[in-house]
Image (cartoon, rainbow, N blue to C red; front, side):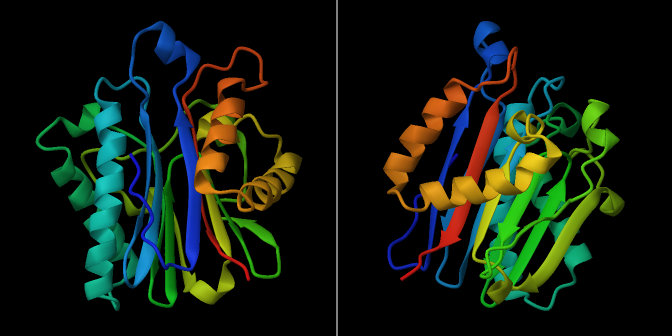
Length: 245
């Protein structure tokens, strides 16, 4: 899922989602989803990965994109809302976007960044990578303790009930960031810990110099030919960044 960028904004974007070999083989749809949407007062970027064992997780990941867009509008109109309450709102919007499908069969991870006026609200539930770069070219991660959770094949995900303690979130000034790069675990889990900073920097620097169409075409190429042997998962990567100059 993608919403095309409006003209005249100071942020640009690129991204792509590539279906994994196992889903191609089993005639299953891509269970990842992503979107970028621009408003007069800000932007939102979302990446979501449907839990593979759930029968309708592709609907869950698409619903996560819709929920984050709806939350962006709500936050714009209620800027003093507490972050924890915004996370509850997001969950409610996700349930609504499922259109009466069983939430237990629509589980998915959720990573998103909302820019509203001069504030940034970023949040992550489950695995994947939410990275940001400062105007001083320093890379940071919303979750920076890459630990044994990545190896247990278990992750938190959206489900019928909302559990605030399963979320990681951060609210800060928009001046602290020049770009955001989000990806599902089909990409992030194949990066060594010491590779993550250089990977984030390299991707943002390389593709922000291209047009959106050029970047998408090239990203599609290397996601299709992912170099890790026996990889099976869907792979999604998305970025918004400040246009320099």
